[in-house]
Image 1 (cartoon, rainbow, N blue to C red):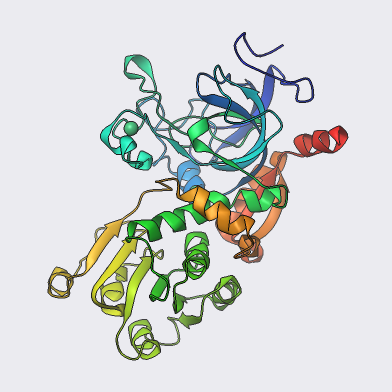
Image 2 (cartoon, protein in one colour):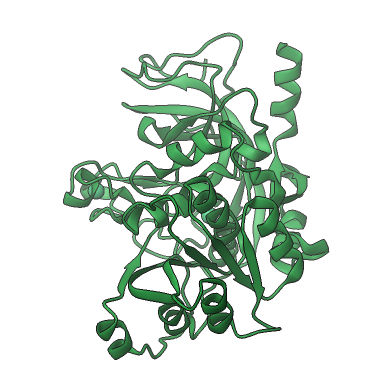
Length: 387
Ligand SMILES: [Zn+2]
Ligand SMILES: [Zn+2]
């Protein structure tokens, strides 16, 4: 048996000693190697990974390195396995774990904060003050899978029980990989102060977080929900997910269009997911006085912001980092109740062994790819055999 004493396993879910895992070499170089299956510690479980969605941040990490931080430095040539939007089946329980059972399907949040710092105590574990301190004599128990610890482009991974979300049988593996994305959108809306039914929202940028942001805002009762972007096919998806209006900013001035759609008043909230250079200034001008902006994306260079406009109009500016305050659980509840169909943004599926090709689809947006999912075929085969 691969797992040590104190770790619970079950004969229906045998755990091997080694697994296939993709590791990052030089920038852009991934190779498939054998690694030991990791062992869950106190308050952790071992997840057999069934499906993983590829995120723009994975591409950033694979091709450039940051924001991944391994043992205090860049993630290259350290045997690091990226990938963070995964789901799977619990196959082993660390000492003392009784919150989840073996065989249960779960999807995972990325960040297990240290649980000790000021921000973790506030539920802001994505802003943990001990971020990356998970090695050497400063080990605080922090994990951010695919960022500071090994992630999901492999067969098994350990997760803190705090990062697990139960997946209903009615939800497919592919849909379950999107819970954390919807959770990030939910966190943005939570940080804006909790959306009130009937209040108006603009979502800028129809990437995965923006599209699911429109869906979550609608599910929370926002009205109207207005989505802006440059690609008609993505704006179409926004309509399917619940947006009341879409604006293609290539064809019309977004600020004027928002003003027109709101009787000249402007909206109460903007969820900024485009990262465009002038996004903060445009968002401010879409708002009514006292409105709030949440920034969920950013440009790569420093950009000028009209601070006087923000101050004169009492505009609140928030930034979010990842999926804090258990927002994923609230997002999953909406998805379980079919309040929106997140699978609209899932466009392609590959086998885990085809990860480089899957990444090419995601990076080059081949065939208008948005969310590309890779699946562990052996895991699926085992699940069928067990039925
Ligand atoms: Zn992501
Ligand atoms: Zn912390």
